[in-house]
Image (cartoon, rainbow, N blue to C red; front, side, top):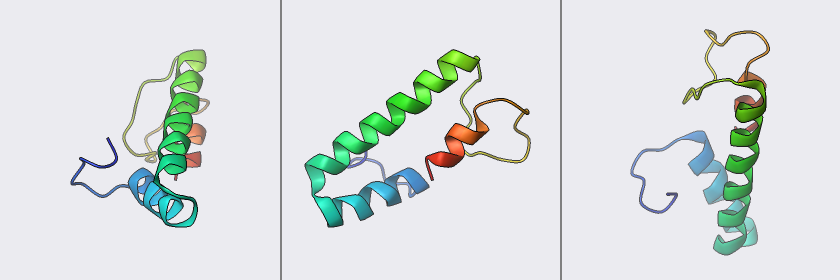
Amino acid sequence: MMTRSQNQCALKAWKQRLARERGHKRAVVAVARKLAVIMHRMWLDGSSFRFSAGSDAPAGGGAEVLAMAN
């Protein structure tokens, strides 16, 4: 996912910075864990996926978790 994507996003930028500091393999595992935590939180509170944590997010939804991804 992070190597084939042509679009730049906050998660990819975070992974690239982490890869420079810690290495590619650790960065891939960190991104996978971050995505798993986000998906688990979405599953628990029943929120739906939003690519960006915009201002139209409902209160109590997964906006806090998505904001942590940045």
